[in-house]
Length: 348
Figure 1 (cartoon, rainbow, N blue to C red):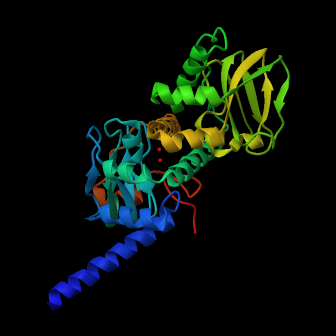
Figure 2 (cartoon, rainbow, N blue to C red; figure 1 turned 135 degrees about the horizontal axis):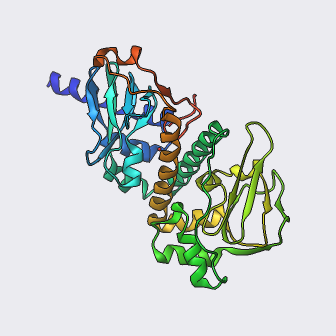
Figure 3 (cartoon, helix red, strand yellow; figure 1 turned 45 degrees about the horizontal axis):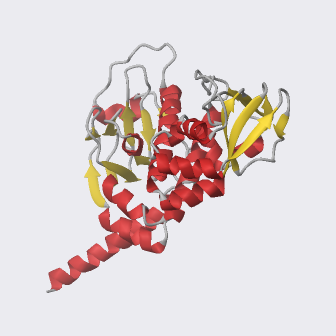
């Protein structure tokens, strides 16, 4: 009887510690109910320095919160390992994107991890739209911050698709399906978005919005091109053509408020309010999944660029126990909220 009582007390203590961890380090603090339910599905994992947590090429099923210790992620040979510390979550990008593991995770010190089954995470969060909305915005904010850290490089790709011939409903739906953010949303979800979107027509050189004016809108180009320019440090600019979401997934965070938006030619764009996206996503979880996937795809591309070596030869790796001290690493800081929560990063 005494042993059973002690075991129950120990389990209760572990449950409380997990809930506290989730509230402190999740990208968005879950509600008390969601925190309790998530804590119930988390599993404690203890790893020694040098242990492989998961390997490149594996089919992912779980993500891992780091409670203590450090993990290094190893990608392609030309990429620097990336080290994650306490409060980070690793393995979520592959799950959101729906692919095999792109990198190997290895403990560089003794670690305490919390293993999160992805399928159960989806099942639980589907019932809490306020949490998924907040998470979507936090992940988007982290994407924008990573863009700014790479502002001296080419961050945005040019559009390669032809303009949409007119603004009929079928073309609006096709334009909405084009950005990676909405690429896997169902047609009925896109129809709802298209119904709520307004049409913007501007002439070449026209100022669409000055800095500070547009933080609650999304712009998807149908014809012509829209330019954005951030005139404060770090400066960043880009041109977006047919089928592109202006500023990409970073626009979900309201980051457009720090940019001037102008028309590079006579242009037509769909304009969608953030609140309309949130309202529709509350009822259509496929839209949530599509947004998280798109944000993860964009973040993964920036993460690879950030970690890629310019021209260094591949070094021979020392024994695992020496990795933390001997390897050059790209470290993600607390300014990367998709992987770690802001100090009291968290590619979703």
